[in-house]
Length: 556
Image (cartoon, rainbow, N blue to C red; front, side, top):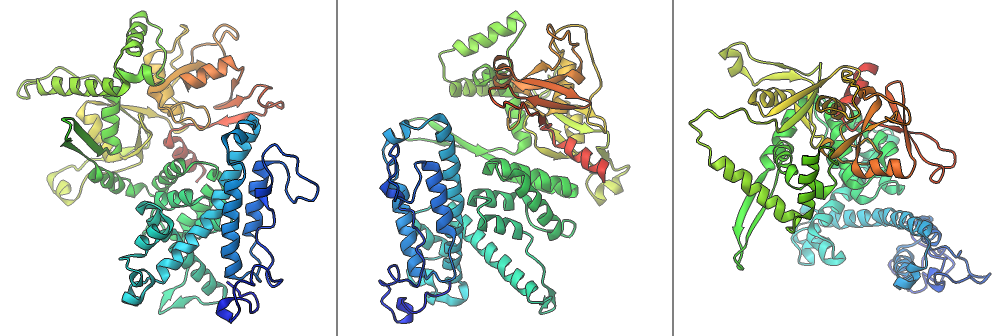
């Protein structure tokens, strides 16, 4: 960072003069700590009586680091900024006085603050890593201070977790590499040591941290979800996808950005689906260990396929407790109510259900033919999903089954390879639901009011879960809604006029006067006047990744 013209200690100055001198414009001129929530600021106070606006303006000003700012001023201003924010609205009574609108505004302002501070944290972590490089040996910054790695030093200094320390160092290093590559390109350097100089594929992500568009967690999720370039997936391809996701998804949480990025990687790298699926499979596993108090602890993680089998089998034991669909048949409704009224906790019900399934399975004689089991897992495919089965032993020895396209587990929306589709369907516990190239299932219209099982399966294949924006409830937790209502509009029970909504959003639609209308093959959500006076329609998009794949294939 440029020096301030001679007042810094490293330039022979006192350092104490830096914050008071005219050589550096103050970074934190807003003085937020002087105004309490609910006060009317005096005319000479440089802040407005709006907490969220103050926080955002304060940090925007803090980020405007001019060329004449020295590091001493920077450090002091950072400390002053933290103190100002910490003392502004320190009691719960201050927050209780906020209106609902200002509570939401405050959350937006806090997010802006976190994005701004994320840049400082990543650059700080990168500096620690650069000054602790392996070639420095025991003279490196971390080793000299008694730490085995820059991550360990960062943990001690900033009190972050090991995971966050690793995340910050990785992002900081990526930002440094992206900046270095860009500087070389801008100065006309096209190769180094015979290796072409190209922009870093994650340069858009690094720029998004710098501009405050992405938080550290979101940037890390985007990098991890997209993966690394390969022979078939170039850095340029990943960079283009990263730019589009930043433009379209920057308002999402880190978890949802990670899921979106993983899906994008699958869509541009169909050949890599099976390898990524195998990697997740190998990471799965459970551990059973005894505890001193006599209890046993069950820990582990499941790959998407295993999770789909287990959750589908256990859902009937607890779904009425967890927002599952309402039942219309008296016997089903009575069973659901019994689960709701059961005095056991939801966790205990889940465990008892698992034990029941294990007991039943353990009691089966594997030497005897068993009756056909009920379908557990549903996989959605398209007419383009094809598996090429080897025709003879030589071909089988030469390589595994090949195929094109992919399938989607209906329960959790995870992508599986074409070979997995073939294996699962042959196993008999999986139902394959196929949609056409337009993403529209067949019209199975009936004259009855309720959608039958086959129609619901078709809706599940098309919608992929609750169609409401940002809702992640799977098809098993949804209800079929008539866009042309049965009584009011005399609507027919056709797949084309039905959409899946979870119970919460289905009730919200009817109780709060939202509308869903169909325009050709698209559905649009129309808010009530109390939410949007203009009632601007919002397009509803399927949660099934296959439809996006089909759309891209159709547009080339």
